[in-house]
Length: 297
Ligand SMILES: [Zn+2]
Image 1: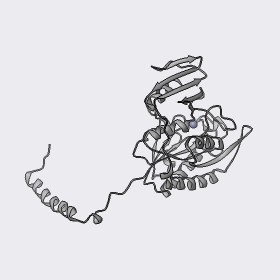
Image 2: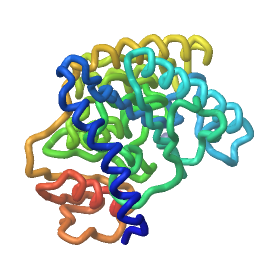
Image 3: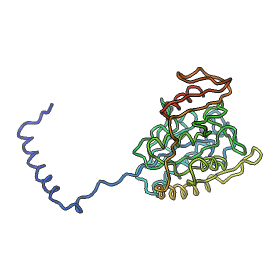
Image 4: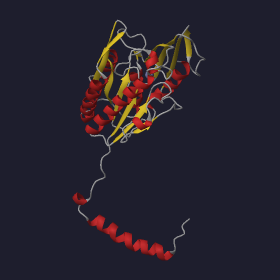
């Protein structure tokens, strides 16, 4: 309902109509096009950050956790800066580790928005992604459970032995790339240890990457946080600038997941138990498969 009087409405019409007429009469070249938005989605984990070598360093109860939160913010801000240098106009950061509240909001470059806290639904570390984005960047990522020569390798919870979709065994970065692919968005860059860089490139092709460390007999040999920051900034800028050459990751449906776990959880509706610790689930929807994964992992 409007409270405007007829007189006010009439005056408004008088003012607006000539403007519309002017706009319509202007040559096409003189009409400023709406600026193209370029949106970059950054998903950040902790195990693959520079220097991290053991679990307590990325656990809020650990004495050195505050230091690694600061390193997390440093690598995140380097990726944000790189994204803007590479042509981004909007950046969303998804805190993807543990309870998803590791990044201190005030530490994050104010040009980006930060999605923090646990979310409902299957997207998890990719919550917030949609088809308005142009590129995805992974920071602080780690290799899947069972990977040799990797630092803090695991898949989601420590309970997962392996998860495969249509016969492809996937790390977190693999099924997160699949989620981005549902919306037509390619992953263009990954930072983490050397093992995850190799694993993600084997799946997605030669995307931009920085290996911030590598495993040597369970120990970590790596870059200083400052050097990691410099390389991530440069690498993300290049990868975002060259995003048109990156391909979205997709597998042909329907999707059959084979999930192997150490300790069994209740069966997700429609899932089948193959043998002790092994389940299958089939759907035409990747997100439904990930819901089954999250319920039984
Ligand atoms: Zn993590």
